[in-house]
Length: 440
Image (cartoon, rainbow, N blue to C red; front, side, top):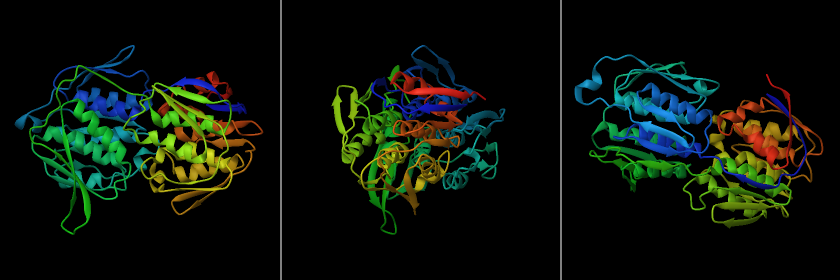
């Protein structure tokens, strides 16, 4: 689907959609628990449904309700039974990196033969060093890059070693798989640990289901600082009758940035203002740009003011780069957004696609190593942007369109369904003018 946007400031109030980061984690924990659970999840997306599909393939019974999901856990094999033959499970991860990286360790811990199918650029996105650690622990995996990725055997409980600067999802996947192994499991992560708030979301979800993960700061044998996550041998996911998925700060950031670049103010409702989500940092980041920020109960509001350049390290919240780059593009002065190396292994090489998309609209932006350097301009011009099948690039372009002088065409805009299917409906409700020009 291609859309045309006629520039118009956005204003008003929008309700935050459910956090897919939290939904993934709660769904996995619920499927591995000992009794049914109801998950309140007001919104869904392609990525969330990919995780639901995979858990169903493993034997969990998940029913979608008006308010979320009802999960009847899968029956876990015990003892020697886990090594007996049973059919290969077909797991369709689609384009969801979280689904793949969470389900792979879980499947290996269950000892369930499985084929994990991927779409889009996901087969090309790296799995190292998670892949190698699972093989060392006893799993048999087809070569990286194969689609499907075929899994056989099962992993042994042991100490897993992970670098902290590649993907927190590897660490989260291992932690959620650990209680299935019935022995102590340690995950040793070298510092710096980037995107650490996402690991905290995992620990929080596991705690809701009765699993306490010990987190300690230590020195390894070579005196290097590490963070050690320990799951006790007696840990198991216990029943949790009802849990709720809180509002998503990652997608709320686009609306708050829209408020920052123009209009009479934009409010996002349904947010947890003390959330462990790392992307809650959008409030502090916008304040540094000069945006007028206010908070009230479950609401966050951004009101346009003078936008001044600043330097921002996004190592712990890289998903905020696309909307923040829009703000910097129409600010005064030169902004440097650093710590963005991991953007190269997202749905697109997001350093390249952010730069290309905003350049096409008239921004002065360039890549320097793993940073973006943005010289603000008074107004963007408009133009055509290919979303590169990346939901955050499509949403970034739509927000940037509010500060353009001419119409903006977004090609392949339907990719927003990956995380936010109703994005353009909410965009219009806030005063945006969107016209579908190609539904193919």
